[in-house]
Structure formats: C-alpha cells, structure tokens
Image 1 (tube, rainbow, N blue to C red):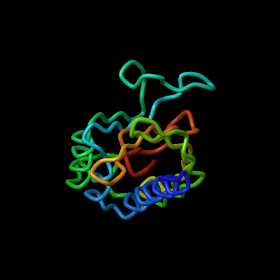
Image 2 (cartoon, helix red, strand yellow; image 1 turned 90 degrees about the vertical axis):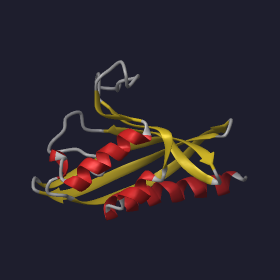
Image 3 (tube, rainbow, N blue to C red; image 1 turned 90 degrees about the horizontal axis):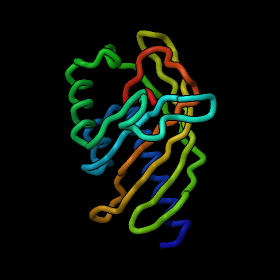
Image 4 (cartoon, rainbow, N blue to C red; image 1 turned 180 degrees about the vertical axis):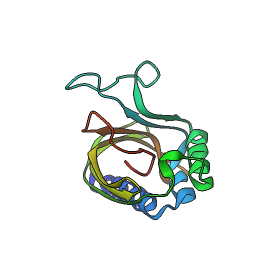
Length: 164
C-alpha cells in the first residue's frame, strides 16, 4: 500500500470517528475500536510532560478494553453519566493528520483537534492532539489505542468521551 493510500485510510478513520461522536452514533463509534483498545487522556505532570504510563500515573480518562468503552456508552445512553446529562451538542474539528509509522501490521498517527461543546455549562472549547495506534482487522483499520493530549492543564466543566 502506498503511503498516500495509507494516509488517506487513516484520515478517513479519524474524520469518521469525529463525525460519529458529533452525531452520537455510539454503536458505529464503538465498532471503530479493537477489543483490546485503550482510550486514554493522561494528566499533565509538569509544564511539558504528561503521565507516561496509564496504570502508574494520574489520568483524566482511562478506559481499558472495548468493554470499558461499551460500559461508558451504556451509561451515556441510559442517562447514568453525570457528565452527559443533559447531552451536550459537540463539533469536532480534526486536522493535521500525520502518519508517524507503520511496522508489523500496526500504524501510528497523530492529529490535532478542537472540540466545541454546548450544554448545561454553556459553551466550552477544548483542544489538543490525538495519538492513534491502529491495526488492520478483517480488512478494516481498528483503533488499538487513542491517547488524547489536552493542551489545558485543568478541566472546566464535565468531560466525557464525546467532549474531547
């Protein structure tokens, strides 16, 4: 596969994920993730570093395994998530997708993001970068890890999987 074709496939996946989150199409969003997926937003440990290991440091969000993502979606859909009641409207703007590497059937990519949400807490805009680890499964790219780096070092308002 050419590097242009690979980049195009990765961009399509990144943009699709953002669209599914904005449209609240939870089951379609879950289908993008591998069974052993990790969804991780580390906390800042200093002015220039974030938590290096999710199980050894402080995290803003850490969901290990697709079952954890499914549980989160269940809580959102049933209204059992404080951060999601009432449901905020969101717009994800994602760009600057860069393929960082490809080896052994895994692909590494990075993208920049801005998410504006509007809900009970008014309008909140957050931004940062996504680091993706992907792999091919049954002819489709699946997200094995999504690491979300938020440039702010403090949270204002609720944060759930669709706010970032």
